[in-house]
Image 1: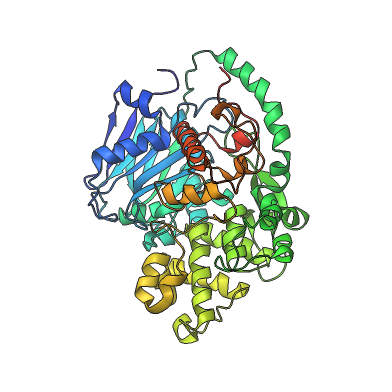
Image 2: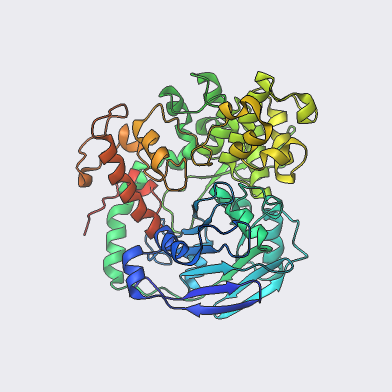
Length: 516
């Protein structure tokens, strides 16, 4: 099979052993790779009743068949496990360079099981695989971990690690790659599963070329589609995903004040991708093999947040740490974003729990006595930043919020549950389901909880067509008739993308799904 090595590394941390496994060809053909294969392996190997933070839970890191080739945006990988935040299926995916490097090392994925007695990291260099002590890097943030391991091993090694949030078992801890470029396996708390296993990082370095069936034809097809995709996504290259903040706010799609505020045009403009480009943006970042470059690299040289030099906030972060909290200070959001990256913490849920706490504070359900003196009114940038630290370190009220809004509301009690926004325990991303009926239905039916990526419908309900699925024009966002069929088709299509591990922005760039 071209595109696959059919080699999976299975690592048992309990006894510090590993094996190389070959899967049946049928599994690759039916589930492709990435999230699809991860879901199948999770179903087969993990009892649904296991403790999410116990040694019996497993993490499946899997690439797709295009990874390691020249196919645009194919340098992605998925992580699948049982979520400590929701208690159900957990999936997260990421770009960057780690998945590409794993494929270059001659493997399609890594399975982590068991629990190490003491902190360890996994070292992969082509055929050399070792489980090494990590006491010297336990406690370091993800940027520090990346820099330290690159210095210790080699400059071209790729590092995937957790930060203090994962070590502290914050239920929405993320796993980070690419150092200060800040690529995140963000959702569902997979970083806490890694932390519970005492696994600090997995490093990888490879030197192999992935075999392609017809390389010349592949290169020609890439040359044919790449110019159109670049042209169609030029604004995303200029302004990143944050370039959509202003228009999404105008459509009622930008969440505000813990989902209770209607309009915020002045605030949206202040934290938009356009404003970022005018002020703190240094350059854009591209994941391996990307032709779009939506990632932001920002730098702050003056003021209270001086010293920020790395990944800038993307749309979801601007929507949650910004809009949901009504914070219109772009530099404060950039700082909070860097804190989340360093601690290894999902910015979507972080913003959601902070906005939840702000509304409880506004309603008098919690007071300064509960917050440790923090004035948690909406719009207080300094309090938002401090609460990020408290959550990651599980200090004060941060210990409660580190459990996510569902459990936090249960612990706080009273009317708190009325202000806890989640679906199946997962806090919604920065897309208001009242603006798009397809998003609302996708939130309700997504396997992992509130997820706009499961159907990725919002763009195809306002701007883009999908003729291959029978939609020659956008499916009206407020339409009810036919919406269920539309969402089901889109979720099936996105399931394929999640298994191939291709970036979905390629579709907004005009990629056709039936070009062969």
